[in-house]
Amino acid sequence: MSTSAADMDALHTRADAAAQSAYAPYSRLHVGAALRSASGRIYTGCNVENASFSIGGCAERAAIAAAVQAEGQAFRLDAIAVAAFRDDGLALPITPCGACRQALVEFGADAQVGFRQPDGTWLTVSADALLPYRFCFPDR
Ligand SMILES: [Zn+2]
Image 1 (cartoon, rainbow, N blue to C red):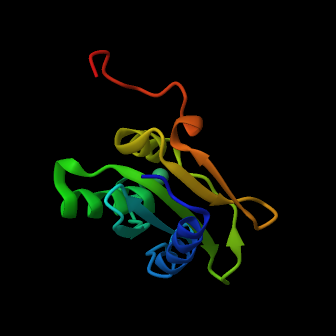
Image 2 (cartoon, helix red, strand yellow):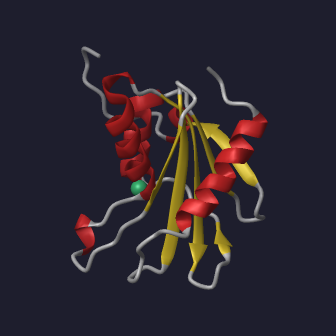
């Protein structure tokens, strides 16, 4: 199943909304992610920081965890949008971090990944394009 431009627009809106739930008292970078599974269902996540920085979690992986929880081993990623905002509400251009890129390709190397560019428009690329030399087991 491929994701249409209208479906991506809907994910942009849901990612923007998910960012409003972020717990980001340290970076003040409120990140939201909304993904569409191959089954057509939508899952969202937000970043959750911690005073012990390394145990904080990203929005993308929170959304993936929600999808796996709901769909189990059958979950496949069709598309995801990631949005970020400063404390004052200004939208910021971000791309998924390296760990999240690895998590995205695990569930869909062909998945569409949308994020804002510096001019505020959305760019969509494949997960594969974001992490071409990713780690994978040789036999998979
Ligand atoms: Zn990340």
